[in-house]
Image (cartoon, rainbow, N blue to C red; front, side, top):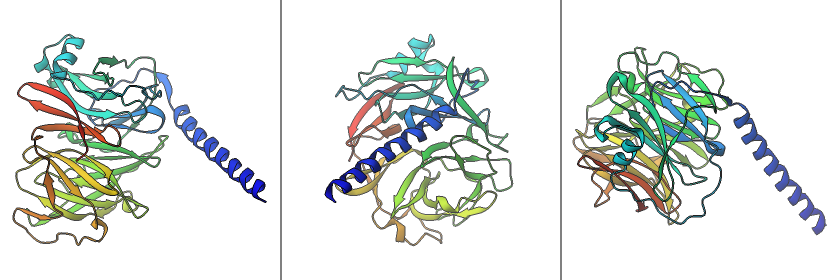
Length: 359
């Protein structure tokens, strides 16, 4: 009987491995070789098997690119690069002030970091993807003869194209996209199955903004991350000025309004820039970069039962945010590994890469 149980367990493990391999193969097989015609490069997120999702806000489209970057790193180096924007500019043959770094994402397999960059500013800017290894070496990820897929977002905004796609994330077989549309209630959250299929109209994101004392359906989500709560997935989204709002993904129904729960107000006149969710000492935390408050740490304990803010408040309310000292100018960040975050820090005209211990 014991041998039979072991045999069955072994077969189950093999079946799971085969199933996972098939899932990855299906994702990779959905990509076809060619030259993706990106008009811009904005929000980034990694999916399965080294697939990088790129938000093209100008085209109102999401691209899935096979980076081929599937070899775990043997290096123990933690990236630290001063004036990485100057290195990028030199590589691309432009001055540093003609370079716009929009986002970064760390490949969880290799720990290589990818940057979405605009070479040149204004309407003549050209999208570029750059890769940095653990040693800080920067190279270009060529957008030629690469396997890719593209999906277009219906009714993406024409008025402010930069806000057509503000953030993307891959969670459990779906690409979640935040941005604004041309519709009356403009703020959108979309759940797009991957491999890509038909894209629906998305859900209208409705929130109560405590600082403003009212319902909003037009303010875009600036940044969000996926939050696991008792087996359910929520999106924790940050808005300008600065509500922190929880949306259950199961409520993201095409064409319908989804009312978020405002779990915190983090202060007026403040813009969220980027965020991650991580585990430490058996607890879950949010690490949020803001343009005025710097880097803040927020514990998520009890967040599933927090009563949402539904009346006007002054200043800070709801979940408590703890300032991370020494990091007032973080503009982008991502989880590097289980113990570290990779941050992009602005210092005058320089952008510096640092790897910090998760607080």
